[in-house]
Image (cartoon, rainbow, N blue to C red; front, side, top):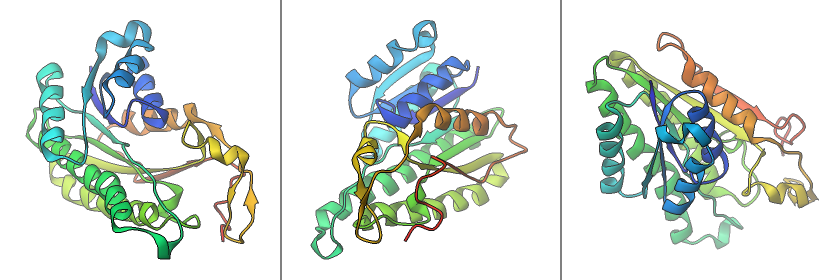
Length: 247
């Protein structure tokens, strides 16, 4: 049985992916800030819940991330997949952003992803058989910003550089790295799209959403590849959302 660690697993995309991986026969370590949400996500997995482990984690804190991976290895023996998903958004007019807003997003989305990826990398390079797969949650915003989204957009552009660096440095250790860029998956965070969000031309427009199950299926596909093959970048999005041609 392969072992996956999923961050931000208490809700939204992380929860959907964690439950799909449990359903596909993975042992899954669910990480997130809220222990109650993690426990509920595992309980909803039914008979597969026995292969789930909830670990309350703050990805911005190195000690908390180390504890997460120590517990994962102690319980399941190895790390085969990391879905680096934990993230947050904060924004507003560029001239009005505060340093605190900027740092909170960068600490979570970028530094948190680095800390988790590094901990997974270290486990993967030293385990036997060695190797594994790190899948970073990028975003459509890794390519094109929304209005008033500088911290989030900057963090997601940086994830692309992080992914490429992990992929390059991981070659010697049979570690593959991927980035999945997700657009308008139907989660609690994305429900505002259905009521209208600001567009680049100054208007407010309703945007289409897609079932988050399609994201989970995409992550499962990447995770299921042999380590001799990799999806370096994947975009999965609501077909008619404003991405191509945004702005």
